[in-house]
Structures are given as C-alpha cells and as structure tokens.
Amino acid sequence: MPEWLLKKDNYVPSVEKSTFINKSILSIIKMLTKFSYNAEHKPDRFGINTITILISAILIIIFVSLSRSFQFLMVIDVFLLLIISVLKVDEIKHIIRMVSVVTIFTVIILLPSFLMGNENNSIMILIKTIITVTVVNITSSITRWNDITKTLKLLFIPDIFILVLDITIKYIVIFGEFSLNMLYALRLRSVGKNKNKNTSISGIIGTVFIKSKEMAEEMYGAMECRGFTGEYKIYTKYRFRFNDILCIIIDIGIIGSYFYFVRV
Image (cartoon, rainbow, N blue to C red; front, side, top):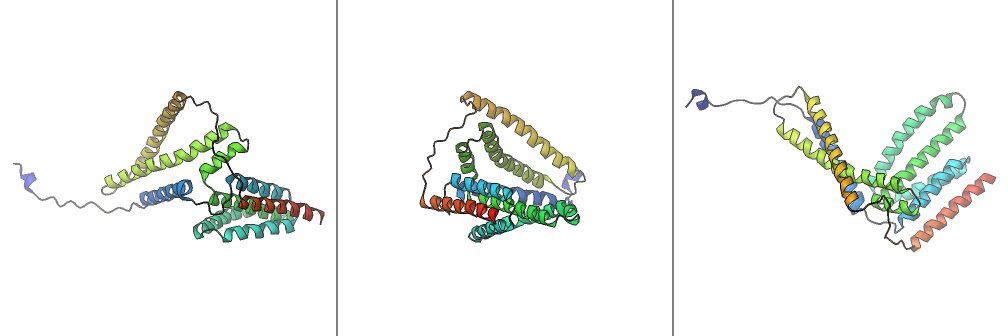
C-alpha cells in the first residue's frame, strides 16, 4: 500500500461567503411562494366577480386620466385608502413599497417641469400616477391571476394576448423552480474559494435558456397534437351577487362625481 494512503488528510477548505447565491435562492423562493399563493390559496374575501373588479379598475383609471379636478382625485384617494385599510398587512406593505418606488421615479422625471413653473400640472400628474399604480396593485392583491386570464376573454381581449400572458405566468414558476434547483446544486458543490463565480452564474443562465428553448418546442408539439388553434374558450359562468351590485353602485357614484366636479 502506498505510504501516502496511510497519511491523514488535514485539508480544510477556506471559508467563502456565498451571499449572492443565498440571496438569489431567497428571492426565487419568495417569488414562487407569491405565485403559488396567488394561484391556489388566495381566498375570495370580497365576494366580487373578477370581471366586476377589472371593469371597476379600468373605469377608475380612465376617469382619473381624464380628470382635471383635484377634488375628484381626492375622492378617489379616500376610496382607495378605505379599500387598502381592509387588506392584509403584507399586501399593504407591498402596495406602499410599489407606490413609493413609482413616486420617487415620477418626482425625478417631473422635477424639471416643476422647476419651470408648472407646479399644478406636475402635482396632478404625480397624483394620477400614484392612483393608477395603487389601483393596479389592489386589483392584483384581491384577484387570482388565473381568474384574470379567464376574465380577459369576456372583455374581448385578443386570444394571442391571453395566450402570451397565461404561458408567461406559468413558465415563470416552472423556470423559477428549475433555477432554484440549479442554485442548490451550485451551493452544495462549491468547496473553498471560487474566483470564477461569473462563469458559474453564466452557466446557469445558459442552461435555463437552453431548457426554455427545449420546453417551448415540446409545448408547441403538445399543443399541435391536441388540436389547439389559439382560441380560448371560457366554461366558467359568472353569477352576479349582492357585492357585485354594490360595486356597480360605487362605480356609478364615481362616474357621477367625475361629471359633478367637471361642472364645478
């Protein structure tokens, strides 16, 4: 037996921080959890059909965009605050975070206009932007994404748009899980210091790209074999409930307040 086999190996790999990998794993897990909760575990808290919610959100965005009255915008702000107050803490934090980012970005963009003397227009654009972002985030918080894709068909949205949106949402989850497994494998196989981390990350990105190409071809073949012609059919029947009627009454009140403040 060779002598080197009888010697004890005292190799201790140098410690290296894997902050980037850990943060990437946590980010993907957070994203997958959000998608899974939205698609499967989100309860119908308000008892309102998705089509009613979408139409209400679209109406608010349209009339806010057309309005030139600060009073009307304040009425919408109060209405949105009432809705936000009944949401969960995590949803409120998410809405505040998104609105804060958009507000900072909008202020930076409008700063030259504000300094040039267009204070009223700049403030109105800022308020409209905040309201629009808030409406979109509230709609996303209280509705499931798969319900939204089904409802878009009832709103006469083109099938190709629904197809792209539906496939994108589904494959974000699939490729998120695939990337998560690859990051776990990379972390388990990382021993000692690795000076070429960029090579490992670029390898993961390249593998995900190749995998996406293969899955796209497989999905196309599967849809072709099943006779999919690109047409979406809705088999779910929506029934208007009492809460839907209340939502419609609120929409009528918003429209009425818009025309009232136009005259003032």
